[in-house]
Length: 80
Image (cartoon, rainbow, N blue to C red; front, side, top):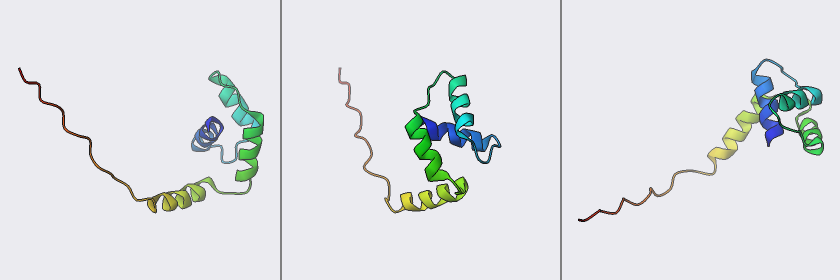
């Protein structure tokens, strides 16, 4: 997940297609080590795809889950 987060930050920063080296350097700059197999898989999965389109389609999928739920219980009265 951290590789994806860094990849997305690089895209937001103006690098439309971050490379493995870009992600690794960015992670290293903040003291993180990239997992090579996770990063390779991520880059292969994202190759040739538009990140904005992927996020939009993912957002539509999340909408199907619904949302909400019961609120938390009220606080107990402190008698005294």
